[in-house]
Image (cartoon, rainbow, N blue to C red):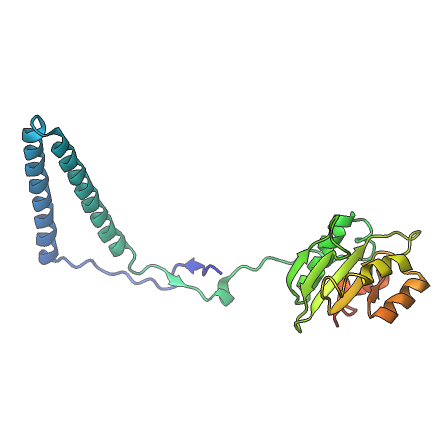
Length: 232
């Protein structure tokens, strides 16, 4: 996190102290540099007709030396200007925190498309302390739409079913998920999360296989923070 910088509450004005030694040294360096560059250029011009290659090399060296001298002067100015004037602020005291977005309420999930629903469920996992949260749903997802690591270290594998009131999650859906969630994805917590409901055979199969069923009510409670997450 970037530590914000703000002006100090009581800035101290420092009077610049005149130093004859520093002035003499700086003036001497300038004179030496100017004289050296002038002599070098004179020699380069005199020998350019006889040795054009050598003159080119000398010119490059002179240019490099000049640039180095300019950079040295800039560093000295920056070093003097960086003294005082600002103090670091504790990130806990002055850092701006982004406000959380609005909580999802009943019916919000049902209005999403399938991809947005998977992303929303992944967001709930991350909100409640999961790490390494990934949305992996797609044509070749083998039943897994969201994978994550629970706060206690267990691997969570979720399948998201955005179904309406007229379409319940059936036993066939649970059987397909049950065939891959443990054997293929290595789930330690497996759950099917839906915006609708489950059929009775689906609930029975899930209970026999250790798969959790989160229907619309469970999902709304989880989102509102009034109900448990699948791994709790």
